[in-house]
Length: 272
Ligand SMILES: [Zn+2]
Image: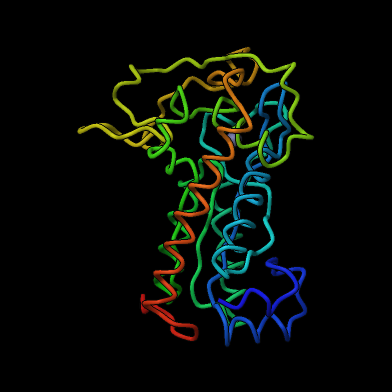
């Protein structure tokens, strides 16, 4: 795809006529990075999930020709995140409406295919948004970067949790200036039932396991009196982050290439 035809991969950095020209003639797939403003322990900032989504989608767009929509930064949160200092959850209804409105607005400029790229566990709103938009004729895929960690068990020692080895490694690669490894320390959370019954983020699923957002599996974080970390960020390295990010970028770029080949620019896959 013709990367040289635009000054930026970011929707909000491009003038409207150039944006429309690009979506009409070159590539009409837009990615919406979705993060969260959430406490991430004493060693990484509250915008980790937004930063991860922004950093990875920018690299994906450069490789694939897709355009990146501005990241709304705030996200929706599972029940056990609410009431924690540093975390600002949107209500599910707010987040669903936010995603819907962004996709509808961007489609006016000529974008016909959408990927919601989340760096934070918010399927409770993104899946609902996908189906509401699908009913109205919008082609939308939703993904979470950590689901690609199923292919990274050769890189990471532990399954992904929160402000841990995986997230901190990505931070050390994408925005090391915001990560203070001298304050990194391991932490944990209290499961309400044995963890063997659910699939952790990024873990290979086993038969009969529930997806980790299909139940109220965890004790509320505000009752834990912990350091806000689940997992062990002291195991994080920049090298691990680079391998993970590169694999995610390659994987999503391959998906985008396949979509654009099957449905060339100007063609909207029919959902309604
Ligand atoms: Zn996170």
